[in-house]
Image 1 (cartoon, helix red, strand yellow):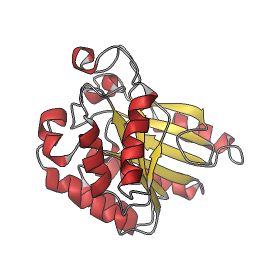
Image 2 (tube, rainbow, N blue to C red; image 1 turned 60 degrees about the vertical axis):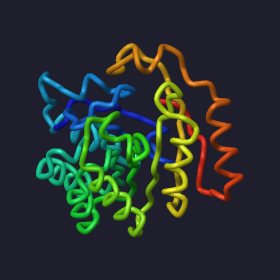
Image 3 (cartoon, helix red, strand yellow; image 1 turned 30 degrees about the vertical axis):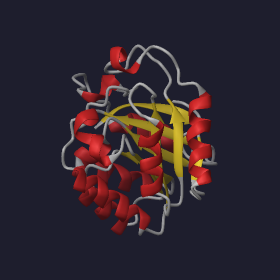
Length: 231
């Protein structure tokens, strides 16, 4: 459910001006999560009407709405109705997801409620239980397959932390996703709000590490990889 929103973002939806909505609650416990305050959110949720009143006033200025978290798909009914209200106003919708609920993703796509999806790939599948606490990796695979067979715009992305991810870890992901439209690797940016700064370290990832991964991937013929900005 809606916790807060950013009125204007030029980076959350590619080539569009977006309002970004933050949903509370997540079923992952990634040590490098920069939205850690949303993982086990215990505060008050926002009145949706506040957001939609804002959106109505920004018609012609804002092009799209990005829904992020936390993990928005945890509350399927609420999310579906929330998106329908956005689509009724003729805005584009981008969903950020960890891919843990492929059945929700599939339903939203079938109802033509999504225009763009960004799915976070946290680690190679074999490392998911250790790094995220999520053990049903088949669901992650299902979500990847759903997106790769869809007609909408999408991207897969990994925030890279060299204390957690080896070069080979990211290359393993890149090989898996080599036929996807886009795979973005992004640098870990330190914030004291991450779930486990002791494990993650207190420094931003050096861009040289990403360039090393990028060059290795390109040398293997992986063409869809891109270096993105940090969060």
